[in-house]
Length: 258
Image (cartoon, rainbow, N blue to C red; front, side, top):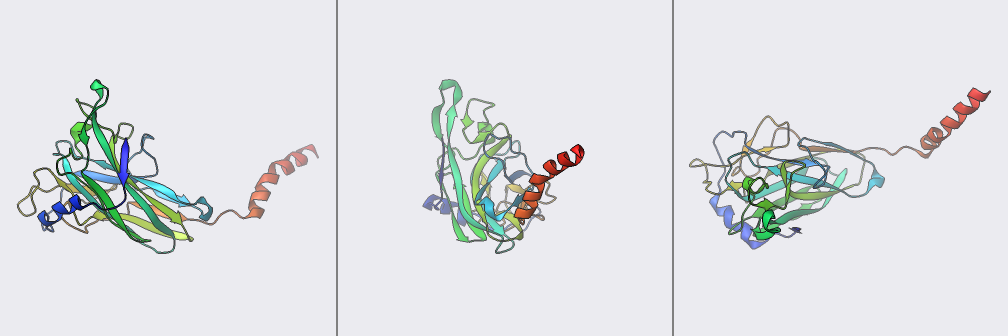
């Protein structure tokens, strides 16, 4: 079951004091990206352009996370999400999933959960902060739980080769374009055994794909160099255009008969 929560829980703050802003160079590592494709639908990494009209109503964008091979379990993932332009699409909701870790060979016997706490804060129509999952005694987000071994994180999506992290909901409100960007949240992105810079090691994160830069998991507020998604709210076809398109085949048939 993919349980989710939308309010920040106290355990996530346990890691905030252990992380400081990085001054060292970042290397490509794990990645997180947004997709228009829901869990199980075969999402692919990218920086999607999402075209909407005002009549479409709220839509969900789905967030996936891909550890780098050899990464230790991620014990905290914290994202801030910003829209660049007001009055185009409003952020109106979010979720972070907290799936069970199971042993499929034993009839999906539950060995634990991914996170101890999940949550975030909808600060404005253009900003979500602290979209987070944190593990204190639970499994965390572990690449070893991809089902290739004994255990399976039920939030691992084999059709995407990625772990489903959560979602955000947007509502189109005006014509125009707005960019969606991830940045490192105030709790940081950390693996088991990570230490603040300059001691290290520190997780390296890439937002979106393609993305020519990466940031350290303790570089709070840091973001990539390009937008992780672009939302375009476009005019709807007028009634006259739609009526003309519907009548065109009829007129062509009459012309041929004549």
